[in-house]
Figure 1: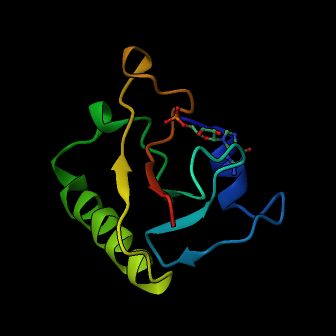
Figure 2: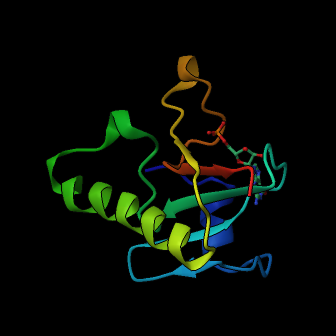
Figure 3: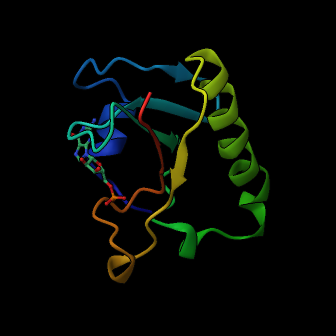
Length: 105
Ligand code: 5GP
């Protein structure tokens, strides 16, 4: 399994503010936001990318999407985009699975 900057953020090494946290995942602001709101929803389990997820991760993957919905409601966002970069050839830079939540609001 990968050990990336996201594992260190999840471990609290940098005191990053979590917009959301539960047993399975955290959400925090992207350091280089591409929109007014740009959050990263990251599972605590360090799966490198969707390509490495297996059947046992099915619940986790669904949970991440449901957390995006909850965050959208929490922040009262009228709309947003969800984006997952998958693999080196899919534009992924940090090899710890994450969903980008992007909104102009
Ligand atoms: P990827 O290209 O892997 O889908 O996206 C990685 C994202 O992580 C990028 O948008 C980048 O700005 C963000 N990022 C990289 N390092 C850090 C960091 O140390 N803290 C935070 N909050 N975001 C980071």
